[in-house]
Structures are given as structure tokens and as C-alpha cells.
Image (cartoon, rainbow, N blue to C red):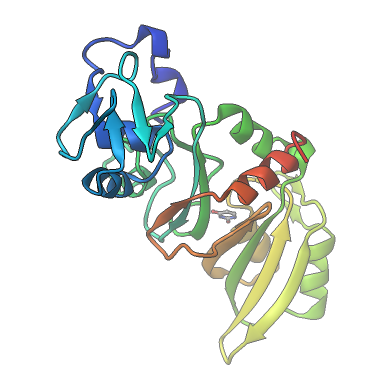
Length: 260
Ligand code: URA
């Protein structure tokens, strides 16, 4: 993982890091995506030390230059960044895979936000909502069992689970690392060979949903996470990411007992 801790403190950053390209500066300051920042520049909306800078290769030193967008001073390094990735199947949840497999780091803007890391994991075959943040405290809080952050999955399983199977999943089922906590489980539909279960769990054990399905003898053949706490996959197609809205950021802070 490219951890937050590998990023030097602002005051210690060397001349090798600064100056940096203006669009990178704007993206890292949370103003816009790299592409959005380029658009702001070419539209003449960005000034450095009072002068409009529209040329995309232009450099800036965050420690000594004053940057404005639409007349507003841009603060450097103040705000942490969080985003949602809609992870496709086939990607490992790691920021660096020594085995060279496709990994989620390839799908998120690590250059603009070097401290970005995934909050929890989805296994390689699982698709759906994966939160990334540069805010270590928030990420840690969201994974802490005391906050009971719920996660909802759609699990396509082989065959048709009985009412008794679903009751077992919902009430708690024995896995090799202990009985699972109560979950919400709904049979959404079924066809000749498979069924779709919607499962909301409050734990985050290794391959938990797949193991729960296996425990009732209905192998999971496709798994998608559709929500994580207050976050959903709204407005983010598979393979793409988007920043959290202000409302979503507030809701996450609330989920870890900060500001509500
Ligand atoms: N449960 C699983 O089985 N896999 C995941 O990736 C997440 C939850």
C-alpha cells in the first residue's frame, strides 16, 4: 500500500517534489480532478501570484506561490480526499501487487492523491463499492467493529435457498472463525438455476458473504457490494470512480461518531 505515512510532512518536502505542475496542485488541493483542473486553467480561471496561467505545463511551488481559482485563494494540503470506486471483478484490493496482477491502484488517481488507500477489501472476484480515502482516522473508524458500519451485497447463488436457509443466514451461521452476527437477508429473485440474495452484514470478515453462502450449500457465483454505510454506487459506473459529495462525507463522519 502507498501509505499515508510514506508522504513526507509538508514542511519536509524536498525541492525534488516542488515545484509541481499546476493542474496536479489543483487536483491535490481537492479543487477538481486533474482533467477538471486543466479545464479550469484553459478557461483562464486560475491565477498564480495574480497572473492568469492557462498553459498546462506551468509549474507552481505550493509553499511560496499564491494560487487563486475564480478569485478564491486555494489552500494547500488542508483537506483530506475520499472517493468511491466501482470495482470491476478481476482486480486485487491492494495498492501494489508484487505478483503483477491488475490491482485497484490502477483505477484511482494515486498521482493526485498519493496517500489514497482502500478502506477494507473486496476479494478479487467481487465487484462494486470500494471506498478510498487519504484520511487515516476516518478509514480506521469505518472499519472499527464498534461502529457497526453496514455493507450490503447482492449475491447470485446456485440453486434456490429455502426459507430455513435464509433464516440461518439472517440469525447467524457457523463459519470456521465463529458464528456470524445477525444480518438482513432477502431473496430478491430466482430463475431455473440461480437465486439473487440481498445481504446486509455489519462485520467484515475474510470472504464473509461467500463463506456464508457456502455454509448453506448455495455457492456464490457473482458478488457485488452495493452499499457501504451511507454510501451507494449512485453516479459511478463499473471501472470508474468519483469524489464523495459533501453530504456523503458528512454522513461518513457521522457513521464514525464525529459530526452529526
Ligand atoms: N464477502 C466476500 O465474500 N467477499 C468480499 O469481497 C466481501 C465480502
